[in-house]
Image (cartoon, rainbow, N blue to C red; front, side):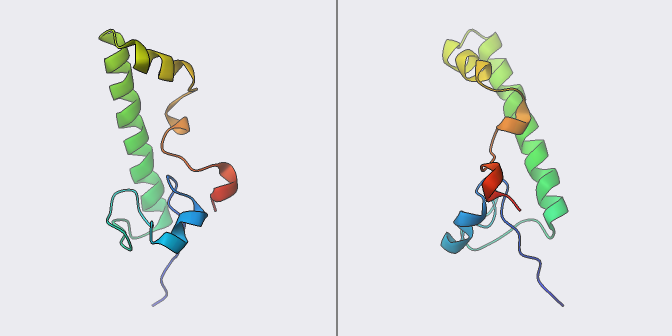
Length: 86
């Protein structure tokens, strides 16, 4: 059985050397079995954070409203630069 190795979408390839394999797990561990599952988990987490930022902004938190002004959507959250992704 071969082991699939991929870079976490939140951390990127350069984090692999430090054991940062998974946004949801401890160092040197993963919670996802495949890159596709990793992508799905990160997509859900980005959407959860995006909703929370909107809740905070709607409640009058100007700092989070400013953060939202700098983002185009949930795809901009918890993401390594494109150069760091597989």
